[in-house]
Structure formats: C-alpha cells, structure tokens
Image 1 (cartoon, rainbow, N blue to C red):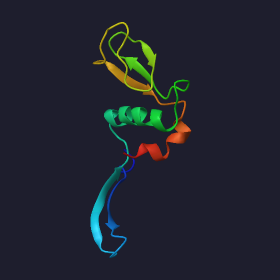
Image 2 (image 1 turned 45 degrees about the vertical axis):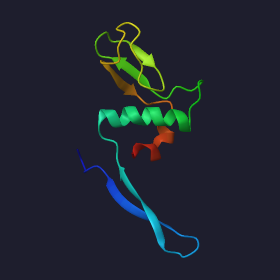
Image 3 (image 1 turned 120 degrees about the vertical axis):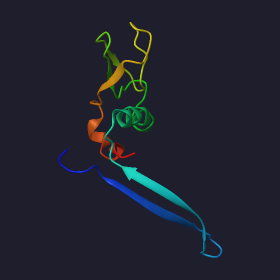
Length: 104
C-alpha cells in the first residue's frame, strides 16, 4: 500500500431551534473502502443511488465454478446454488460515479 487508507471521525451537533443549545449529536466515521466486504456493500448501496433494473452496477465471479454473474447485490451462483464462493469482480459501469461512494 502506497499510503494509509483515509479515515476521519467527526461529530455534528443538532442544535435546538429555540435555544440554540445542542440537543444531540451525529457521530460520523468516514473511511476509504479497503476490504472485499466494503466493495460488496458499496455495490449494494450504489444500486439505490444510481442504478435501476436496467443498469447493473457490479459483476461477480464464483471462485468455485468460474461463472460470472451481473447483479446489483451479491448473488447466489446459478450453478453452485450458494453465494459462499461469490466474490466481486468489477464495479465498472458506474466507476466514475463512485468517487464519493468509495467511503463508507
């Protein structure tokens, strides 16, 4: 790895419109995707932001049988009947739209 992955935590207070004092606060942790599960979750989230049934946001590969499957969420392999060996192969169709989506 050339550089450490980006990570930042911030707290954003929600102020009372009457008193201006904090009522509660949002705690947000933003980090750069770095694990396989991060990319799987991104593909699932991206389908709600940019995709429709006509646009597939990810291609998946079954490591057991070698099948490629186009799907917006992690699919079950048609040949093997399980998603145990299915891994993300590409998030290509909307890669240019995912700049902000690389952070979870």
